[in-house]
Image 1: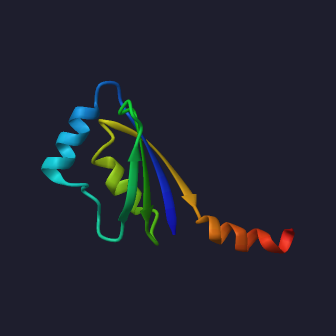
Image 2: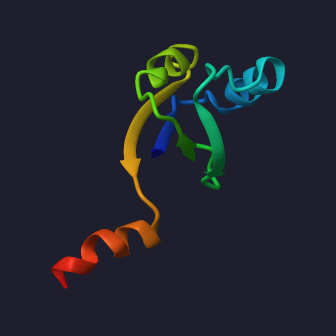
Length: 90
């Protein structure tokens, strides 16, 4: 399953977020896969697309970052999948 992870950096935390990522990596448990990410131009919000079959793995991962980042984790589907699911209702 795909998830859009919305990371809101705490005030002034962006440099430390990047420092930690550089020094320790993403610190994700096995079974949680990073797909891609985008960061707003003010370094306040990061949007990450991630994949896992076990959503409980997010708790392990977010625990390593909760001092710097607030998380919103939203299950998502691709546009193609959405079109297929909604097609019978059209």
